[in-house]
View (cartoon, rainbow, N blue to C red):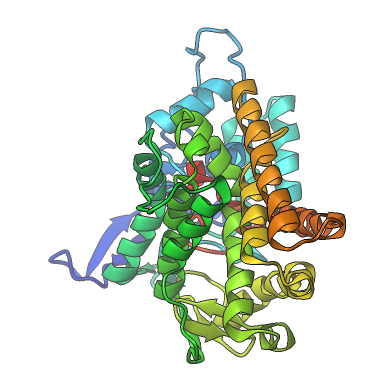
Length: 457
């Protein structure tokens, strides 16, 4: 049998590339390209395709994805990091297997331009079964064949067809448009830009004729990064993939800049800054999204479920154009994501609108969100800094209630503010679970930022 691979980009002199293969090689698997891609660079078993940028078998690709997504940690069997990963080994050392994945260049940032549909991708039970199989000592080949029988190819192909002469023609899918590819690359580099912002040990400069309190500094930072809010923004008929990625990149960078206006945060070590950012960036962006919608549209934002997106109003009627970056339709993607966005109005929008917080109260809410670091893996010293800062802004808010508002009984307002913060943190967990499913089942052809985690970008 001969295999012909069409290059639609015309980068070769030949329209097709023909390769002769033994039909017996193809009859043992549902993967028509299995025998053409040599060995898995990790375990030397027959490869399945290009996964995370390198040629691997399905088992090693799934192992790497599971390790990254679930943040698994392994210990070396021999404690020296030199375990054999050859095809004759029945139970591979997971530590050495993962290290080999990293050495050959597998990273979650590598873009795969054509992935299986959610309904055909590996399910969670496949991952769990694979975990059990590894513990029982199944070798790489058995795992590969088992997973291959359940899923479709992961090669970047658009069409596979065979003619009566026994020739299989595989049409290669072209890459995305250059401007989309550049945006995805920018999204993948957010971590580096955030790190550059956090490398400074001094806070962002604010020019003021008088000394600013802690909350006043962050109020200035909020207004500075919000910029001009339109009074009558136009409706957004279609949310393009380009606009969405630009918005995500801007949010991540603005979140880092906002946090660097805080003097106490700016003095923390880089590792502590990144750890806090990882935990709270999504929470801060979500609060701002709802607060800005209420500030611009008012109660109509709650009634009609309206958001502000880069100077335009986004509604449930806004179409979503994914530019071919998913095997799902635009409408399916919108249905995946919109329920989570609607819930924001009930759990964040309505309480915020009912409370109608003063500007200083809202800034207090943002600051307590940023410094709610207990149990988040930060150092004891950072926890002490957080405690001191929270006491400082609580005293400042107390003075505001007593001296500016003449309001001695304000406990009910503090309770409402902290309830909104807790609702927001619950939404972050739900959002993380949603994007975990996107990652596990390859809904998008790239890694979406998950939970504001810069290490995943």
